[in-house]
Length: 324
Ligand code: ACO
Image (cartoon, rainbow, N blue to C red):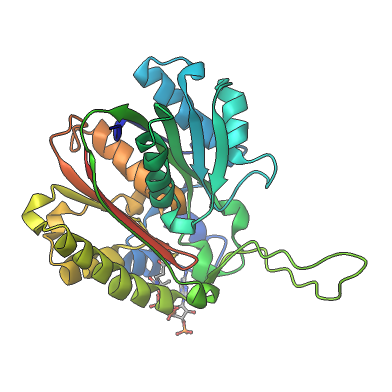
């Protein structure tokens, strides 16, 4: 029987740092307002790299770290809500850039849960026994999807990419999984709506920019996502002491604080980096994971148990418990 394990991690963020003070020069906001409500101090904003450029940097790092050749890769999945284009997919662009000629590739759209859904999907490919190695990447250039005249959303998001190399192995590493969607609440977080447009249609509503009902999303995360994590732990007879770390989607420090309390897991186990990157949607969990490996918190030697969780547009939410 084949199992999957995360064998390498990598992340890449654009060079340009935009602080809260920088934002206060172009819109009516302040470091005090943004920091106290979100925990965000700065974010990376791309000057000239699109989503596939960031994702390709991650893919190349994963190849370099593993020592594999591009042709060794069986598949590439990129989770994103800010693709360079609908066709070709971001993943196909990454394939061309790194020369992974044997890989099949596709993008997956599940907003801030995208990386979790992509990792859960990739695990099934490996488990099928048909594929040995896959790249799973979350990558976003959200700055191109924002309405920069709307201070309620523009201050929250940033650009970046992170990813993992997933490989076949003999032992079980993916211990538990829980994925959800609620399309009925989808209108509380929207972006990229492209209206009908043809000589035969009469309804051309375009809402290209990201729009959000902040309070609803805050309550959704604290209530529904916390509950799903509690149930996941219970169903798998796992106690909080069985988890070494929790890596939640990095939306907002207040969401994280409240979720820690609701789930009943020590706050120290929740890793955070949204202060430096803002909310990078599908990229947030893999960037945090890669940074935690880089600074030695997560060892990548199979000795630790971590909970990865994403939540956001769709609405979507999902968690994985992984031996890493
Ligand atoms: N700077 C200064 N003032 C602002 C800003 C800003 N950037 N944005 C809004 N305000 C003002 C508003 O205009 C309002 O002023 P008013 O009372 O005079 O009308 C006041 O601040 C309060 O606005 P609210 O929207 O009620 O602010 P709230 O306290 O709800 O905080 C926030 C907004 C931070 C977005 C909060 O709702 C939140 O954390 N939501 C979670 C959503 C989130 O993080 N989403 C990320 C994407 S989804 C995801 O990743 C899961």
